[in-house]
Every structure is written in structure tokens, then in C-alpha cells.
Amino acid sequence: MILSDTTIISLVKSNTIEISPFDESAVQPASVDFRLGREFLKIDETKQTSLSLDKEPVYRKIDSDSIIIQPNTFMLATTLEYIGIPNGITAFVEGRSSIGRMGLFIQNAGWVDSGFQGRITLELYNANHIPIELKSGRRICQIVFCKMDNTARNPYRGKYFRQDTTQGSRIHKDIEIDKSIAKNVSAS
Image 1 (cartoon, rainbow, N blue to C red):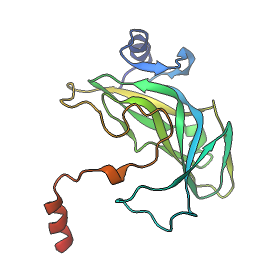
Image 2 (image 1 turned 120 degrees about the vertical axis):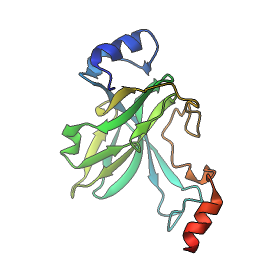
Image 3 (image 1 turned 60 degrees about the vertical axis):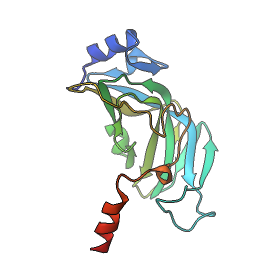
């Protein structure tokens, strides 16, 4: 069940959901607008010629109140707001449609697990043929909260727990579930 504006405001005011800083005017009928922070990461193409799931990518960090994303360019950003989601509630991130209509795709892999705490790292891609300028503090995405059918047995405490800055991929730290399955699949 997606939470309404009334429920979201009530849960934030009771400190069940943490959003900091919180501005009630950012609450939409079934979401909360989050703003763009001032930290960005871009893959450093001068230090690597390809990316691998087994190696940590090298990023170039940019701290700025504004940034221009060139055409067909990917970069990471973070939200200004810090969020804390209790067990039993989850959320997903959607780009604002007004920004999407300019050709900017915004994701965070789509999902924020129950129990997550931190600033949300956003994946930005300029699909347009001209640059797009973004400014820190502008509304960039919306967070939609959902009530789960039950609390999670293992709320999120993963490798991005309590992140406070833009975080690059940590996939190289993954522990594969069953390596024998991967070997059998690649052998066939």
C-alpha cells in the first residue's frame, strides 16, 4: 500500500520516518520531493579503460553548487535530505516528470529497503543531445513510501547503510549467494 500525504506527515512528525531537513511543503499527494545535494561522482575515464563487477571503480569527486551534465553522460549525485525508514516500510525513488521531460533520467536502482538510513545516491543520465545544468537545493526526485505486508526478518544493514555522501558502486564487495550455480551456468 502506497502511503498518502496525510500518513507521511504523521509518520515524520512522530519520528517513525526520518527526513532531515523536512519541509512539509515538499510533501505531494503520495510522495515527498527530495532536493539535490552538492556532491557528485563521475567515473574517472583517465584511470580505467573498462569497468568490472570484481574491482572497485575509480571516481572523480566534484563538490559544487551547480553542475553541467554533458549529453550521453552518467554521474552520481546525492540527496540533500537524510532519510531513515523503519522496519515495515519501504520506499522507491522516482525522477520528477518535469525533469524527465528534459531528458534527464534519475534512478537509485529504484528501491530503498526497509531499515535504510542515509542520504540517497542518485544515478543521473543525460539522454539529451545538449547539456543540462543542475543546481544544488532544487527538487530532483520524489520518494514514494509503501507499507509492507509484514516487518522484514532482516532490515537493511548493507554496505550503503548510513551513507552521508554520494557513494560509488560497492558491487566488488558482494558475496555471491552460490558460486557453484554461477559456474554451472557459465559451463552450459
